[in-house]
Image 1 (cartoon, helix red, strand yellow):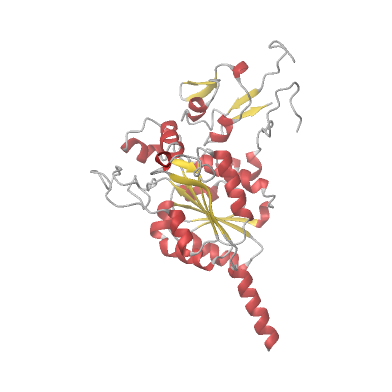
Image 2 (tube, chains in turn yellow, purple):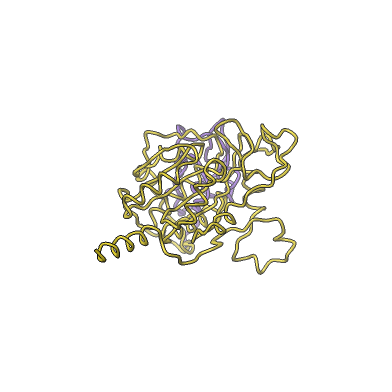
Length: 288
Length: 68
């Protein structure tokens, strides 16, 4: 990497673009996501995080369920599995248990993880098995036509809530924390460099790491809620409605009220499931 | 320091096959380097580019990259 001549070098700025093709199946592009869909931005952050974590492509397994976000394994050049709706975590648990040396990443949507696969989500967190779970929260079921999802805010329009949604939304981070996940974080597609670092930290953590990633669905959520486009959604939902955990103490309470926290929200050391199982097997084998 | 005439310009590559025209790169460029030309993004003012890479980072379609 050559540094540019002159005194214009800013601190730690990338001067050579990242080579995404190394981790992609370029013949599968362009992807199916709509113009302005945040999933592409999150995918890029994920690829950079995997690269920065120094993981070997052959030791990574990306698993997804069904939905827009779950099309991700089709485009990335790792070991990949595209599984049943909501059951990505079950397949991932099986893969990890069969080969604990693999780095297993689960890519799932908010509907996939919190509604259809809600129980799998809770129990994966409870076991603290070493998986990295990336929840793409776009507050809608994009693939089936924009129905409201478990994270759609109260009052929002969807094809199934034409007079406004009356169901309170889930907070994926609180749910993961309460269920026992040892690493819980939140990022947005707008803060893409921060997201990259958060995902890298999640990948390096031992145990269930859940990253709730807020991104925009301009086609359904955006159009129905009178957003002009993807950029406006990114500004108003991802930038204005979130606040970093590092800044939250310094800001006056009125600037924090009603905003979601971004960054690493919970990190503890807890025994990991595969390791515990191995210890148990070894103990019992020795006892015989 | 070099003056404006000697300043080395970056090279912005936009892949027209991949660009879906969401205009995220145009809207978030801090120095207004880009513009929409029809349904794809295009370079309007290359000299203003500061190589901040925000267009590359926020492009959902792997369509734009800035080379030094």
